[in-house]
Length: 113
Length: 112
Image 1 (cartoon, rainbow over the protein chains, first blue to last red):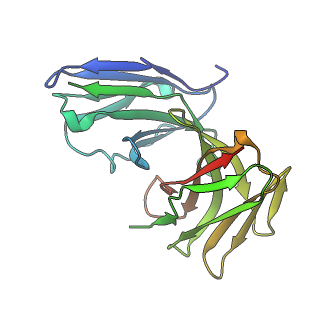
Image 2 (image 1 turned 135 degrees about the horizontal axis):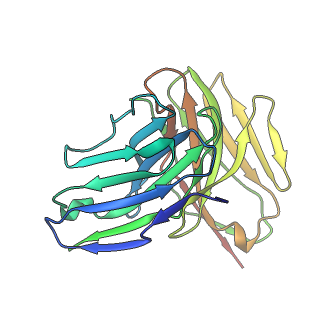
């Protein structure tokens, strides 16, 4: 596609429910990243996929968070048993190569009530 | 942990003025440098890469000082539309797959 596409754009969920966030990167981009940004805060790295290599999960805050990237393209970030502190904007970015700048999607605004 | 530090501001600047802000980084192995712009409730967008020799893109000039480990962004003839948060981004070698480290941003407000 022309840009990085994320869905849904907004998600309100009850505490304890599971949510899935989707990212469709730019076609041909081998690197895909998930970040989250809480209100007024900087970007927090979550997970990184590069081609067929094992993902770098070092930024995932707890075992309630997981992510997959199928076929080297679309990625899904899953948060299980959501907590209020999970409320944030979840941003996906892709890059043709990790040596270059990213293109971000418009994010998913997650609100846990 | 590698860090990128920025003055959060806000910088309140009258329209037409020149404004500059810096970013410092702690990892001397850093290799690539970028400035991103983030508008309120929007995603970050790449503004410009920063090269060792310095580079200019219209009203924007970026400089890198490796010896002092800082990057600067200069905006000339500022416009109201320049109001945004400017994120300094540094990529360093090694340290895992994610070499990109984002600063928390400098908030710029251009006033009419």
